Image (cartoon, rainbow, N blue to C red; front, side):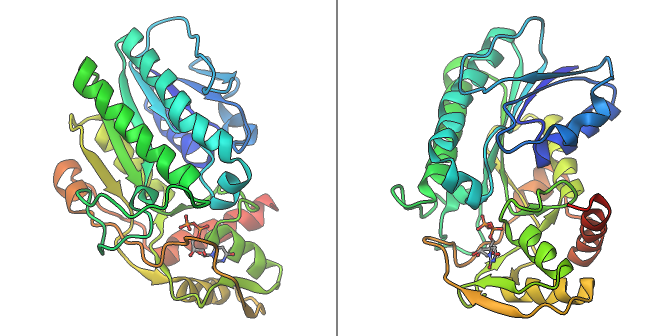
Length: 310
Ligand code: UDP
């Protein structure tokens, strides 16, 4: 197949590129590198089945030749990034999604949208099922990401219903692993960086807010399975094991053997208090489940940060 991955130089997009190339597909990565990194895809640059196009998909996309899939993963995704890039985040998920859907229609390609657990906002239903409509503050700082992804889902469904486009939507819960930028501000990268440098571990709020952390290979397995299943409603992909942020800090201190102390900093505005995926749908529709437990995934990730000297 010939596949376009927008945001393919990012953390998740580059792992998906690795998988699709290894399966013998032709992959075109389109990325403007505002949060992605060419280093993530350098292993493919001389491969004739791979092409990199430096382009912002919020602007019109021109691409010659047939396409089987457009996989739309372009977007800042770390809260720190989207707070610094609010307009870019809104544009790539609205205009960028529109351009990508239009290209899919023109090429007769299937379309795959990376959505997010952030569509549930600060959820009042726990764990979050796909049928939950969410609890999002549209004008809060996270609204630039949450509302843009909600719009992207709405637009994708509109193309599916109106134009009969063959679409997929995943809602990705917190994901970590090698290539998660050490300075991207997310909790796993922050805590590992701080622990490896014996710096204070910055827990926001009282650290009682919860998340669950899926390892990158589990997410890539889920995406790969979903490409083969014709199903158009959103599917949650995430680890169903809930941890508080304080628990995560303790685990990372132990795994790194760090001398770091935990300090408490203010909780960011609208930080979700609880987050946990209900993955019943992924299990039944995709026959998917997580395989990598948190300790093993964190060990691999810590080793990668040490080796890559990030
Ligand atoms: N967090 C923290 N310390 C940090 C970075 C994040 O306590 O140095 C908390 C943050 O407030 C949130 C959770 O960790 O409750 C996950 O944050 P992240 O930025 O990874 O992503 P989110 O799940 O909020 O999108």
